[in-house]
Amino acid sequence: MCRVSMSQVRRHRIRTSKLLAELALQPLEYYLQSRFLRWAGHVTRMDMDRLPRMLLTSWCPSSRVIGRPRMSFGHTLKKFLIQLNDKLDDPNAKAWDPTLTGKAALQEQWRWTELAAEGKRDEWRKIIQRTDGWREREKEQAEATAAANRARRGATARNRAPRAAQAGNGRHAAVPPPPPGDGNNASDARAARRAAREQANQQQGGYWN
Image (cartoon, rainbow, N blue to C red; front, side, top):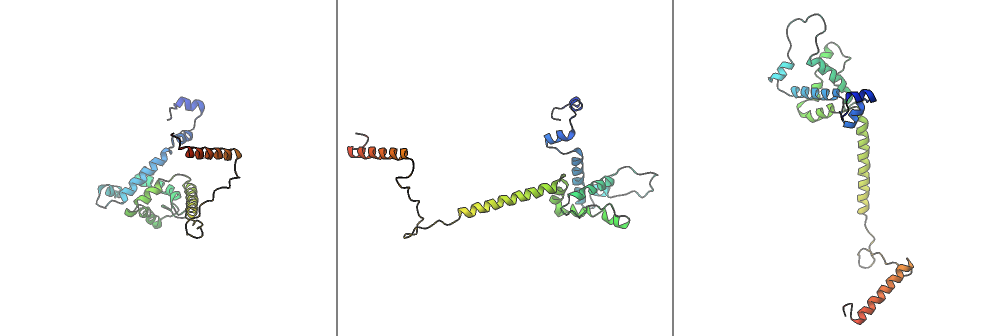
């Protein structure tokens, strides 16, 4: 990545986190989890007569062999749903509560399907695409947006402020010209000479005689 070979990584002790930060990428586990949960939500929204739904929700009516079974789709889904608890809007809500056992655990395993229902596809995708520290970033973004809105409303109020009306005709009062004695003396002298030349030219018939 970033034209950095493994020999350079070992020689300069370059960390993967530094390379990911330069490339604006997330760790591999993030993409695996987000793609897995997106597919799980897609299967949940399928009808019961669809083959993917029938395959992933079926079971074999036979006894298991001795020892722990291999990792399956359900085991991986449970692991990712437990990690998804930190990405929910409500910090007290849980997509999967690992502390429950027995019948409560059997009911718990279907709670996440309510988050990935048919009318909540966009919300489900937004949840699974969140990264670490998303609460702090969303809080800072909301504060910055509120500050920008307050500044915009203040500027609009200043632009809409009524101007002082001139007494007599009701029009806006014009800014009076500065008195002739104020300002720079050299500027006043140049203006006086220019006015004198224009007056002399007008008396002589203009510039084009």
